[in-house]
Length: 279
Ligand SMILES: NC(=O)c1ccc[n+]([C@@H]2O[C@H](COP(=O)([O-])OP(=O)(O)OC[C@H]3O[C@@H](n4cnc5c(N)ncnc54)[C@H](OP(=O)(O)O)[C@@H]3O)[C@@H](O)[C@H]2O)c1
Image (cartoon, rainbow, N blue to C red; front, side, top):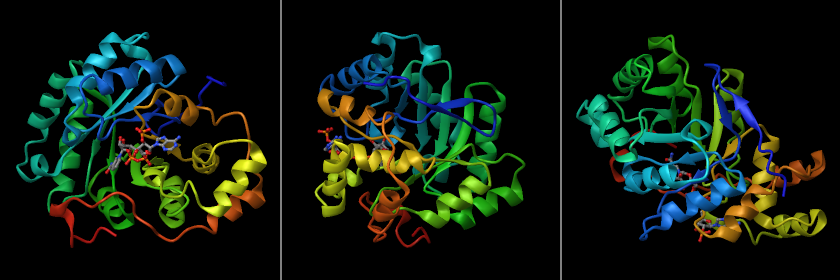
């Protein structure tokens, strides 16, 4: 396995690993701690959690027990919608740090662009960043109009936009827009929760490159300059998902995967965001 995982330089100068471990739904007893231990031993350095995942305490325990120092890791968490509505950004951030038992996080994201709230949330994130308690600030599930709104009211461009992205929903226009504005795109649900792994094109490419279907899908994203945070708590799959840096898909095969796009959303929109103009 090639454990020399790449990093990208964010627009604020900090570096972020291209590959990270997603931990949504890792809620079993000791589950997230074990996943982090295995991932870190495999070479992962980024862990993606959120207050709404209800596992920040476990993530904190996993970090303090793992085999590398805090400074070598890149930890992301996110502010949930209710805290935005209550204008309690500072409080929510403080509680996340407390649960994680950390002095700082590497990246703090607005989880969803809650209408009427996300611009003031962004201002609050700027203050948290200025205080040194988080290195980079960014957004998630933001479409072009949400980003335009931030550009108009703030001089700070989000370092990252974390969006659902995979072969069944390749997000070409939004990815291009972000890349043009120097916003790193990080793909969540990069495996579409397993839903494209048995598609014919992916199976053919799996055979051709001697790589698993998941590795083909993740490599497709990384080759487009998109960072990935596949979730697994299974040690074999954690290792499998990391073994994507030692082969290259041809341009024709990239086009073939492009052709699979059907704007398929695998992750659900939170109830309180339905009908709020998020596509
Ligand atoms: N910002 C947001 O709104 C948002 C939304 C959703 C997710 N996220 C973040 O993105 C991360 C990843 O997204 P996700 O968890 O929704 O979906 P995902 O990573 O696309 O898929 C995870 C599912 O695929 C399985 N899996 C993992 N590796 C596999 C492999 N090599 N072969 C076959 N199956 C495999 C996992 O099961 P096992 O665990 O059993 O391996 C799990 O059921 C989340 O954990 C979270 O950190 C963010």
